[in-house]
Structure formats: structure tokens, C-alpha cells
Image (cartoon, rainbow, N blue to C red):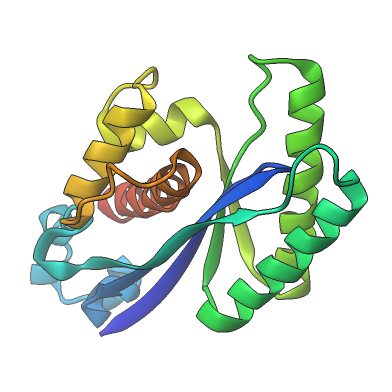
Length: 193
């Protein structure tokens, strides 16, 4: 059984959502297509996230960095410290990160970019491969629609994992959706082999 952990991050400078998924796959799926027996090369062997207990949520939450009265440098330092703890605790195989969204304001996008920079630097320090996804791609991977509302994303993410997450904070459920987007991206790649 191949085990992989995906740490999903919904960046911000006041609150950062995180979620760690553990994915268990039969070892034949970890092999290249050429290494698998002919009978196991069919794409229909890949299950949707959550089916048969394939993916489970180890933990999800929100890191509270403080309000605007706390200097940005202190909030980013706290983010680095908290992410370092998460990376040490979960030992993820990959990091999935939401890209900055420019729809609100340029200033907001710049601030999110600073938070993303902290996450990218720590991923580099830990030798993690980082996968970055636009908000629309994340929503499409989880709900089938790139313009879905946050409540719909939370509901569908919960259904994919077989758990209730609708009452969780938006940052927390967004981070779960980011991790699930990476899982769905892997699934698509495996089916294409």
C-alpha cells in the first residue's frame, strides 16, 4: 500500500487555512504503467477521492496570525513558525497551494502573495514539490463548476471525504478543497497513463 500526504494551504496574512490529506493506494498504482500487469493497466482502477477509504482527512484548521494592528512582518514570521510545525508534524509528500486571486484588489493580491512566498520558501527548505491551483480550478475539481460558492465547495468536499465540513471556517474548508484539487489532479494524470 502506497501512502502519500498532501498538505493543502489557503494563504492569507490574517488567517491561513490548512488541511492534510492522507492518501492510500494499492502499490500497483504507485508503479508506472509499464511496470503494472496488463490486466491492471485500465484507468477504471483509479477510484474517486474518498471511495473505499482511499483518502482521509488527518487534520484541518486555520492559523490565526492576528489583525491589521499587528505588523505584517510579525504575522509572516508567525506563519513561518506555524507552517514549520505543520510540516514537521505531518511530513507531507506534497504541498498544494492556492494561487493569488486578483479579483478583489491589487493590494489584497500582493498581501496573499507575501503569505504564499512564506509557504513556497518553507516547501523549498523541506524539499517538497509544490502544486499551485487557481481558485476556479479548485472549485471545478471539487464541484464541477469554477464559479461555485464557498458553501457548495465545502459541502462537496465533505461528500468526497465522507465527512461533515460545512460548519468549518471558510479558510479551513478552502484548504481542504485545495488538497482535494491536487488529489483529483493526480487521479486525472493516472487515468491518462
